[in-house]
Length: 203
Picture 1 (cartoon, helix red, strand yellow):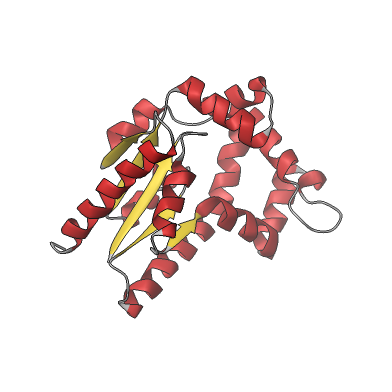
Picture 2: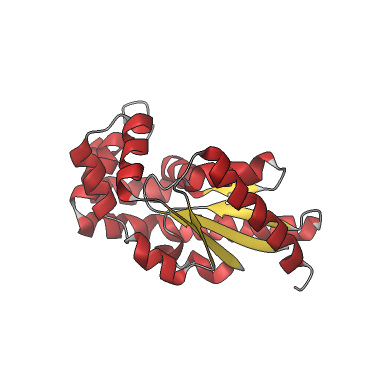
């Protein structure tokens, strides 16, 4: 079974690409919801994050204060890196176990992980291939504003906190230039689906 990562910059369309493969029946794990679940349910992670980010990290009902955490780490690169050192090992262990269970079942030809920080976390070491979804910055900003309703200043801040798409492309095995509508993106995903089937037979 091929292990395939999907990544890209903020607003690039990587989640939409992942949803294409999910709709086709392939297993897809989304790292961001997984990380947030672990940040909520793992007592060790909760304790470390509260120490790092303060008492506002969690809401009174125990849920993660996502807006506070996002605003804090995107404003302070040191805290962002410290949070990643706390959360990434648990996320990577879960993902590796997820792929291993699928491989034991021997029912799927390939499976996907959608994650913003594949290269930053070292996740690429457990993957066979990585797809980078890329889009022009202005197009990304429009998508984010429509989807998340955040200010332009906040969008630029979050984009600046990530590696540039040029950097991501140098590390990618495959690049999807997501510069059209959803049909345009799905056409490129269909091509990769066919390609992965041919590559899987050579493994």
